[in-house]
Image 1 (cartoon, rainbow, N blue to C red):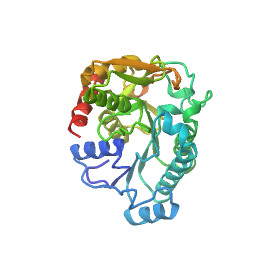
Image 2 (image 1 turned 135 degrees about the horizontal axis):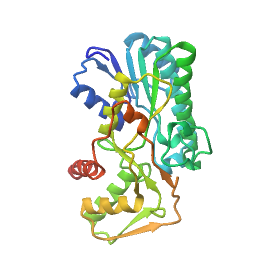
Image 3 (image 1 turned 90 degrees about the vertical axis):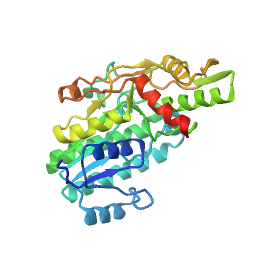
Length: 307
């Protein structure tokens, strides 16, 4: 990408999109365009066609999606499937029709099989059953990855996709019903400290292991790969390190200064037992995560305390 290239960041107000906006500005890209969901409904084909005909972006970062944690994924199953399929189908196809030079599609590590060998290599995609609670979301994202791959094969496009691990950072969703595990725990422990609660209840057993990546690291990876990578393999983006949920809870309790008890609700689902990405391939293209988990959570908590 040239500094003057016309770059469309889809989903610019979300956690990933806003991180991309910050990073593109920092790196001197001056021609970044965006639309709010009120201005452009990405599920409507005609609206997306009109946008591309008028704006003619050269590069597209696809960071818009219907997203959520275990509860949201399992509750809004039809919405997660329909909305994500429509958004990505409209954007990918119109990027082809209107000659976009390069597109980056953000998938998710949840598209891998529930019982995939660890750490998870890119080649494990579609080798087993998905985690049932987020199957609709995962199927939509797999469709997006395969659209990019096959538009490249049939039409000669340059559409790449990446599979980030669990993300956190500025502009995260802290809603107790729909957020992912790290922001949900951060909110719980912060509120428990403020109210003087004697205990905090954490969903599940605390035994599952998860990998977490600060969204600013993801933004750096996306821009790096937009400038360096051309290929049909959807690249894993992560730290290559994971942590048990019980250890994450203890770390967040320490960072927030919460001194009470931590109780585990075994009636709630654990989800996938372990999800650690093999990031050796993205390392081979010269990108490494730079923000440690403690440092990243501390940065997020400083902003949470000011809200």
